[in-house]
Image (cartoon, protein in one colour):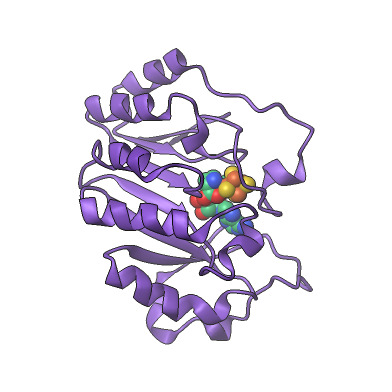
Length: 211
Ligand SMILES: C[S@@+](CC[C@H](N)C(=O)[O-])C[C@H]1O[C@@H](n2cnc3c(N)ncnc32)[C@H](O)[C@@H]1O
Ligand code: SF4
């Protein structure tokens, strides 16, 4: 659980819990070597109040923020403080009703970034335990509520590279922002390593490089 400062943003790692087991995530690689813990709610509330930051990022390295037991209250506190909010999540395991309550707290300067690497037949191949339909439904609900920006972050792998354009079309159809991430976690002979030729010319400008 880490508290980083990025200019006028503060990155809070709320928890080291997650229900997925992505193979190249530190929490999977170092499983058993750390405890699953949550940042105390009152500490988070105090950090949120700090007037030196105008934006809060809820993401993480060893966990996913939506699994913090007070996630909803924390979102509410951040929005009451008038700060912008960016959430990065795998989006799994929460009911649509729960997502509705979260999205309804947000505004046009906020963003929820969903990590979903593929379509119904591939999204679970790296994001072990994810459920494509559940996450996709949450994204479409967020886009329909149309308060925050809803982003679909698609990490390219050899198993999903042929689906980039189809996923992009699907995102566009539902008003979801589509971004592609090139992971820096592959070894040179990695079977999951994608081939750059699969990124359509029209989407090359959407390609970001990740750690
Ligand atoms: C560790 S994750 C925490 C948030 C959330 N659990 C998730 O997986 O999106 C933080 C960020 O790491 C990045 N990330 C996740 N898996 C990655 C991978 N295999 N390669 C590169 N970046 C990755 C994503 O951009 C994600 O937003
Ligand atoms: S969803 Fe995020 S935190 Fe969870 S295992 Fe995957 S990369 Fe790690």
